[in-house]
Amino acid sequence: MRARLVHSDELSRYDFGTGHPMGPGRVRLAVELARQLGVLGLLEVIEPPASDDDLVRLVHTEDYIEAVKADRVNTKYGIGTADNPLVVGMHEIAARVCAGTVEAARQVWTGQALRAANLSGGLHHAMPSATSGFCVYNDCAVAIRWLQQQGAQRILYLDVDAHHGDGVQSIMYNDPDVLTISLHESPIHLFPGTGFASETGGKDAPGSAVNVALPPGIDDAGWLRAFEAVVPPLVEEFQPDILISQHGCDSHRLDPLTDLSLSVEGQRRSYELIAELADRYAGGRWVATGGGGYALDSVVPRAWAHLLAILAGQPIDPTTPTPQAWRDLVGETAPSTMGDGADPSFESISQGYNPSSRVDQAIIATRRAVFPEFGLDPDY
Image 1 (cartoon, rainbow, N blue to C red):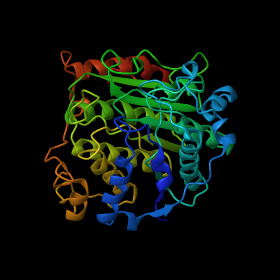
Image 2: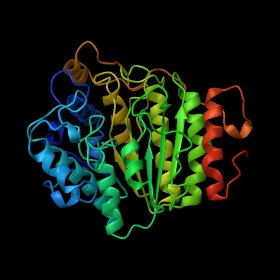
Image 3: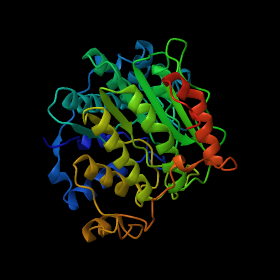
């Protein structure tokens, strides 16, 4: 079964206007790069379904939906702010993004594919009654609720955006059947100001939220060390039916809005690790979404082309040249290869902690906060 990509030009209309960081061109450039590299030929590309308000209602309140539909500034709901400017017709566009992610989930859950993606999705900050952080409707949470309606018992949501996946966490915080894991820059330094290790789930779902709050400047070795130290042991214990991941690539060192220092090679390695987790613990069932990423020409297209290639089971060597036709399309800022020339190797936490390392301090904080809830020893 070929992996699926849910995509259309319609989804690229998710756009807050000239000068806003959330530029739709990043998705178009990623898909075009994947096409020129031959990756799209490895996937089945399908149109997203029409928007469906009933899907949006799985997460969002009726009054909020009506406010978005009204196409008027309404600061009560965060509509018309600097982060989330008023865009006429945004309800239809954002609702169709939700439909696209649900379609990716449907393809996987019904067995038509083991893997599927919606690069226009990953709008993880949206709250039930408010826009937030460039996000109008929370497609990831909508897909999770839809999967629960279809009978999914244990759903893993894994977020590797540089910003905390606060909307999904908040919506699922008291649900023991959904495990949310987010690796992000420390909320001391970065929006949205949540995602501390101490946030571990509601009273009916202790341990259902996992947060790895990483120090500014962390590189591939530190980020991957933290992932390996926290994520696989928890996924093994949780045994999900399906994995939904959010792949904001604003963790890259060139991103203008964050302070992390990953390379494309490091991001690519994280995608491989997530694919391995899906294969090992979720029967291969994996739904991937896009998310943040604001180095629109230099990073996002390469990162997400790598993601699609891994989704298709045919990873791209980072030393591969970017196609000349794609570089001509992008212009002078176009990178010449699919990588940054970085080595994403790292030292496993199994070799021991370094108490003076801020990375290891973050790892220890998270493990001590949640590992006991899973019967795991946080110190080994």
